[in-house]
Length: 204
Image 1 (cartoon, rainbow, N blue to C red):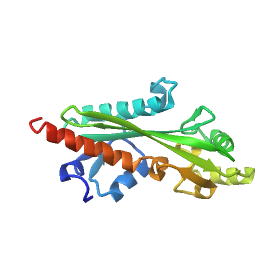
Image 2 (cartoon, rainbow, N blue to C red):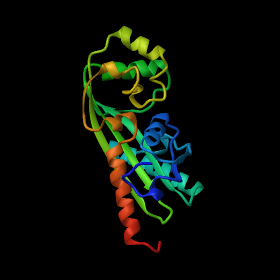
Image 3 (tube, helix red, strand yellow):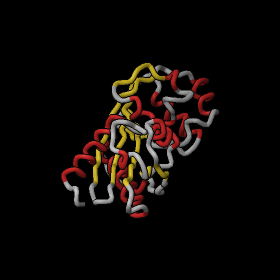
Image 4 (cartoon, rainbow, N blue to C red):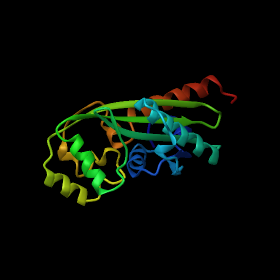
């Protein structure tokens, strides 16, 4: 069990996400949790502000999961990639994945993850993390071979920094785990806030 949080904040949690990457991060941090995919889709939110878009999606996931598991603390997150002002979600197929990678090639982009926590006492916390990622220039053959692996599908921006796309990354500015899909530092700060809120209202 992780030594930095009270036991009740590390067990009987719900992760409102089907992301294997988020599940793996929480497991490595010593959390005990149930995975509950909510079915909330990106097209359910209309918002031009990229950070607000990510946090709204995360919040909707958290609230829906909280309605199904009212006695548990719910953690939800949503990650988007923004390049040249364009929001890149998960590619619809190989053609769109290749197009996204060509857009990212040789330039920087921003990864934004919205995180939301819903507690049984009604407490709601929302935050966001931003990381800048720099891609080297990619050859057409590299893009084609990467797309053939199937890894870009189901990934915001059509790549996994912890996977086969690692050699594409020249550098990052900010939280690495944010690019993977769950900003650990932000999550722990939010959980620490939840601890303080619980301490301030012991009878809730």
